[in-house]
Amino acid sequence: MAGARTRLDPGVRRGQILAAAREVFVGEDYSKASMEAVAERAGVTTGLVNHYFGTKRDLYLAVVADLASGLPEMVETDLPDLPIEELIALNMGRFLDEFERNFDVLSMLLGSDGGLGRDPDVESILADAREGIVRRMAANHSGGDPSPELLLALRVFQGAAQAAAAEWLRQGRATREEVERLLTRTLLAMVGGLSER
Image (cartoon, rainbow, N blue to C red; front, top):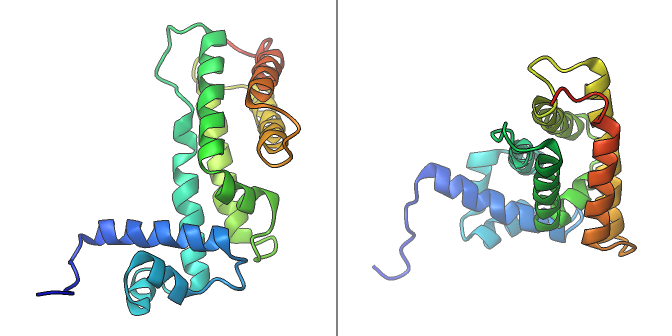
């Protein structure tokens, strides 16, 4: 039958709506973005968007959580025989790849309020993702139970990494190569005396 909608697996449909919502929230100020625009972008009805995600704020938080859930995985922890300098270089490349791939949405979340002010739910989701990154990084430098000093150094480094990536992608005042070189040297200097590898 011409024009009939295809019934997709709920997980696939949810992912399709999330991808559309991400585009809408990046392209529009939160206050101007609408569930109707998300539905149109996803090729579904507004009622289906509401069925899966409830309110616009719930959908926005789902977009944030979807992105944040994958961020810790960019830190490789399964290469115990790789020299620490090479592992840091590998992970730095992965971090910058991820930041470049998701710059629009990360910039919206990290560099502005996304139209929501300092939303505690957004802050909580991002804080969990940052802590996941720190814990995976710490696993590369400790025998199992990282010291408070190492965790502090890695948390401080995250702020520097975020600022350096913005200098490259948002401000255009640095190249990727310059940022990668600076961050690699900075991390080695910060954790050199704290690493157990």
